[in-house]
Image: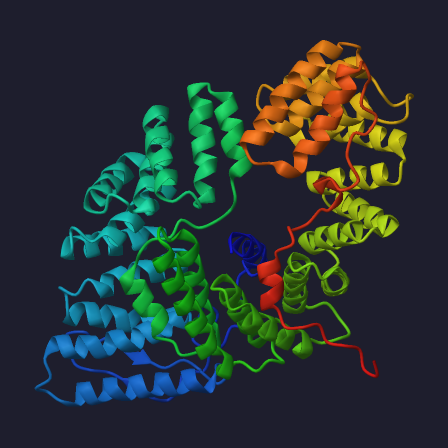
Length: 591
C-alpha cells in the first residue's frame, strides 16, 4: 500500500488550500459592531464593562442560536447575587469565546476583560485576550496579555511560545530566547519551541546554535518544511553555501503548529460549517506530522469526523459545502477508504457550476485524475485533469497531470502543448521542461530535444534530471549530428559528484563508449550491472547486459532510452492494489 500513500500525498496537495470563507458577518474583525442587538448586560462591579451582542443576521442560524443561548446564560448568572465571581467569569468567557471564534473581536473584548476581572487566576482569559489583540493587529497589548497569562501559569508551553514569537516579531530576540529555552525544557519535542529557539539564535547571529536547534526541529518533524528557510540562512551565515542551497530548495510556506488546548477549545466553541472545516484541516496537518501510524490514523479519523459534522451545515451548492466534501474525500483516501473518497470527489464535481471557474471543482477533478492515473485508467485520468484545467486554467499541478497522462497515452502533440503552457506560466517548472524533452525524443526529434535541454540547463543549471537527460542524449542519440561524447562526459562526471545512481553510471558508460574508450565503458557498465543485480533490479539487468556486450565488441550505444523506460511513462506509478479498490468505470449510456 506504500504507493497508495504516495498517490494520496498528491491528493493532499490538492486539498492544502485554506477553507472557503463566507463574507464577514456583522462587523469586520476589529471593527465597530454593526447595529448591536437591543439585548445588553450591565452587571455591577467587578467586571462591569457593558457587553452586547453584535448583529448576527448574516451568520449561520446555528451560530445565532449559540450566541443567544450564551448571552441568556450570562444574564441568568448575573441575576443571582449569590453567584460566585468565577462562575460569572465563566459565563462572560464562554460568550467571549464564541464571539472571538466568529471574529467579532470588539464585541468579545469587554466580555473577556470582565471574565479576567472575575477569575484572575484562570489562564484562559488573558491568554485568549492575547490572541484576540494579536488578530486585531495590536502586538503591544498582546505582549501585555501573554505576559499576564505567564504570570498565572509560568510553565504553560503555548504561552511561552506565543510570547516568544511576539518578541521575535518585535525585534527582541534576546527576550524571546529564554522563553523558547524554557518551553523546550518543559516539552523537549515541541517543534514550535525548537524552531523558535533557532530563529532567536539566527536573529542574534549565533549561527551554530541556530543550526543545532533547527536541525533538531527537523529531526523531530521532517515535514516541517518552513524550517528549511531559517536553517538555510544559518548555514549561509556559517559560510556553508552548499548546505544553504540544499535547504532552500526544500522550503515550503507551511505553519509550525503549536499544540494548544485552549485555542482548540476556542475553535470548538463555534458550531458552523467553516469552523468544522478549520478543525478538520488542523487534524489533517496533525496527521501529516504524526510520528506513528496509529497517531496518523487517529488524526485522519478526527479530520473526517469534523468534515462530516460541517457538511449538514453547508449545502453542496456553496463553495464552503464543496470544500468540506473535498476535504472529507482527502481524509478518506489518506486513511485507505478509496471508494468512499471517489464518491465524495464525484459529489463535489456534480455540485459544481458548469459554466465558470471553480476552485473546489478543479481540486476534485485533479484528485480524481491522480487516482485514475495511479490505477492505470488513463482515459479517465485525462478527462478529469482536462476538467480541472477547464475550471482553473492556472492550476499547474493539474496541467502537469494532464500533460503526463497524455504523454503516457502516446498523445504526444497534446502533451507537448500542455508542457509548453506550464513552462510559459512558470519558467522554473523543471518537470514540465523534462517532460517536453522526453516527448520530443519519443517523436524522434532529437535535435530539437537537445536544443531544448541545452536551453533548459542554461536557465536551471542546478536541476540534475535536466542535465542528466542532456548528457544521455549527447552520448547516445541515434542522430550523429546531435551526439557530442566529450561534452556528455564532462556533464556526467560533474553529475557523479552528487548523483551516484545506476542511471547516471549507465550514462557515463555511454559517454566513454562515444569517445572511443570502450574498455572504460565496459568497466563502468560491469559495475553498474553488479549494483543492479545486488539491488534486485531484474527488469534493468537484460538491458544493461546488452549494452555491456556492445562495449565489449567496441561498439557505442545508439539507444539513449529503451521504449519501455519509465521516463516515457510520467506520472504516478500504476498500483494494482489501488486499481482493485476503485469502483468500476461507468459505461457510457446506451453501450
